[in-house]
Length: 234
Image (tube, rainbow, N blue to C red; front, top):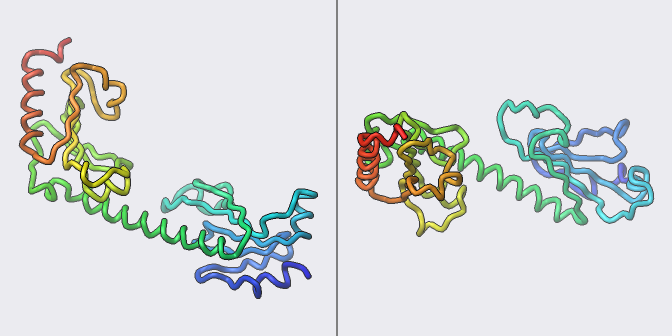
């Protein structure tokens, strides 16, 4: 019996999914879900042979899924395999399919939590850090894709990240006992943002982490003295 006659009974449609009922155009039936970011395909030996020839029939299910969650992304509306973050999963059992659906839901919930956490911290990071005031000559230097918000000296030669514990654990994958609130980088003559690897062996490059904002202010003061000595002229 054709897979078209049995799939909906054998594999009840998961909550939140739709059946496109493309019997006239698709060789295999499928379910769509997650705003058309996931499509579950059903195959039997007959349809598999029609699609893949004599290749061995092992996986009765395969999933096309996109992990792109950017609103209004240019990939939205395309076929899933043409979207960003595309992945194909070949599965042997319906339980494996249901597990992948749960995994996708978990990822969406985690990304939503991280984004909300990040946006809240990003908007309030100075106030969240015991009401720290912006040092003279500094600007808010946070980029949208940075894990942590930051401030930088107008010269670009000092960069200070404000790390929250959630981002430290979930985004950086670091143990909580190693977390420090402030991550300081400086150089007397060179810009330091995104240059830590290139400057790692430079004896004038300073990288420092601490939970004490007063220690950051001391580092800023020490850097300012290098500017007064005219190091920026070399």
